[in-house]
Each structure stands twice: as structure tokens, then as C-alpha cells.
Image (cartoon, rainbow, N blue to C red; front, side, top):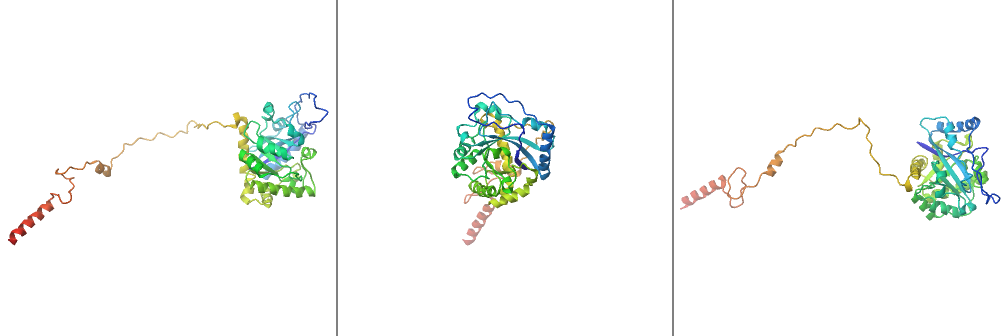
Length: 356
């Protein structure tokens, strides 16, 4: 079972909500639902078909938001899209929300309990920190188990980061259950998500590829291959790669072959299972209850009476007292009255008489 938890999707007529100086203090109108035309859905279907053909069984459609999630302006563009897609047996399609954090996001980016109803329809929540302060928020605060936990931290690998990643931040995020994501589109130099490019969280070109290899190696060194997942982030179909090819590519970062394989199989699987705890009270699952279907109960076995063995009868027999005669009498040393001792006494008396 292979996972690709980053398939960028955006609506052409929908622009992500951004905070501007002109809009501050003004009340935004409630947005209308976004619907996709048949032509727009037909443009997304081939990319999903190719992912299935390459061997992926779990795919996450990704909606990217810049700076912050504004409750009165945010629109969930994935809810109607998943319903309009054709059914694919054996394929799981998840919904993911990615928030790009910049300097303005340090004041708040909408991930609060008051907006829990906005994030509940999404299966996964990811953060893209671009500054040291937003990285600290993502690793220390928003990775703790809650209804608004961000389980994925995706660093802008194609940018040259102006801060140094601290080992304590990475270790705390991994301890809380978060994972760090590596998108292989940066190593290929392909087309990135338009929202990431507009937000300044992605670049293209030769310098972007150099930055990707340098930053990805640093992430691999800090995580030591633990809590690391690999996704695509691919927009064009020509840049899609098979899971085995991606594993071979990731080994160039210093990962072992088994660790590179886990980055696209078991690691994202455990991530999706942990993300389901956002739907429970304080991210706590109830005690498991064993439910046995009808007709599968085993037939009661016939109770058999215990048989007493010969060893048990010997142990239960009481030891005879001294002076008692019987078959079970145990002779004692120097004071025994058995038939052998009686014959010995007779021989001694006879020898004594003959000596006289």
C-alpha cells in the first residue's frame, strides 16, 4: 500500500483568502459553495488515473491557503470535488488543507477552537513554516494532540532558508506525533503549486534544485529517518513517479533502503490513523470492544472428568507409622523388623552356638 498525500488541487475561479491592509476592519461576506464544471473535473481525472496506474492506493487532494484561514472567507473546494469524481474501487481519496505560514501568520492563522467546524471536514492538516517563529509554533504548539492538530510539517525545500533548524524543535514535534514531509517535485525541477509560488514558499530553476538537496539532507539528518514521509506535490502528469523510483531517489539523501520504503508506506499509514483522533474528544480513542459476528462462535467443548494417574495415587497414600505392619510399610535404618533381618538374627544365633 503506497501513499501520496500531496496532490495539489485549486479552483480557477477561487482565490485563496489573504490578509491585506485594505480589508482589515471590513466584514467579509459569506462565500458561496464552489462547484466544478465537467471540464474541470475531467482535467483532474487523468492525474488520479495515472497515480492509480503507478501503484498508489491512498491519495490526498491538497488545498493550499496563504497566511491564515479566515472563517468568513474560507471555502472548502474539496468537499464537492470528491463527490464529483468517478468511483475507484480499492482507492482511498483523502482531503488535506495546507496553510503557508509567513511573518503575518505569527499573529495568528485561524487554527483556533472557535474555527474547529471549518477544519473538521479535512482529513489532514499541514503547515508550511517559512520563518523560525512559525516553525516553533508548528513544532511546539500545533503538533500537540487536539481537535486542531497539524500532523504534517512541510518545509519549503526549494527555498534557501534564512534560519537554522534546531534539533530540539524537531525532536519535540516527532515526540508529539507530527511528521516532516519531503516533496520530490523539487528534486525534479518541475512545476510547483501556484499558491505556493504566489506565497513565496516555492521556486523553480537550477538554484531551487540545489536548495532542495541541501535542505532535504538537513531534514533527513535531524530526523534520522524517523517521522519522515515522501509525497509528490506534482501538478503536471509528466512529473509523476512510481513509488519504487521515489524510494530510490530518497536513498540519495542518506536514508537506508528500508527507511526510504517506510517513508511512502508504513509512515504515512500511521499518520493517517493518528489524524483520525482529531474527530474524538481531546484526541483520545475509546477502549476497544470485541464484536464477534453471529455464527462464528466456537462450539462448546465436552467437559471430560479428570483421570487420576498412578503417580497421584502414590502421592495421596499416607505414610505408615512406626510399628504398623502392612504392605506399604517403609523400613527404617537400624530398627527394621523385615523378614531379611529376622533370618540374619537366626544365622547369628546359630553361629554363636557353634562357636561355644
